Length: 205
Image (cartoon, rainbow, N blue to C red; front, side, top):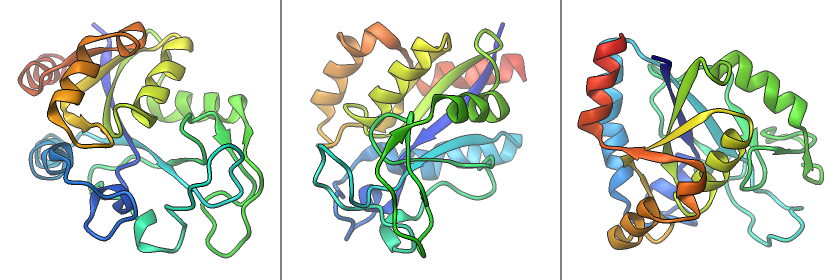
């Protein structure tokens, strides 16, 4: 059976903490911080992480947030479970990067796609398709988690969404449940409950 690799998407204070530009109350954030992370610490398991640098310029998207050096850019993922290096993206899909990405002292460049660098990062931090099943957590299920699931699936990874560890942008539980059970998400990922994931982690580890 393939190993499990957890990958956290955009668990940044801009989305997760009161005062953040895109903050909403989302139960998945508390689950990650207070249930998942303590469990992973106890078992010495690591989580890969993708975060965002959403400064302008970003053609097609007028948002300007998660600015490096500011509070909203900071990750909520505990250092004790975080695997480095972290991948920084500048659009919904992790394919997109830019000059000076994540650097608070330099002006960011225009977004461009860098599939080779993403491939190298995935190989180093996640592993190869077929060797690992990738379990996604983080924000948001209807945007960046969805885009990441799509990209990983296209690259040959088996993608699984941890149901308790994700939320939609709105934070609405009914919307989340609908997305988990329907296309388009089901084109690229399946889902798993926490108790079932724990069983699998304990079986293979």
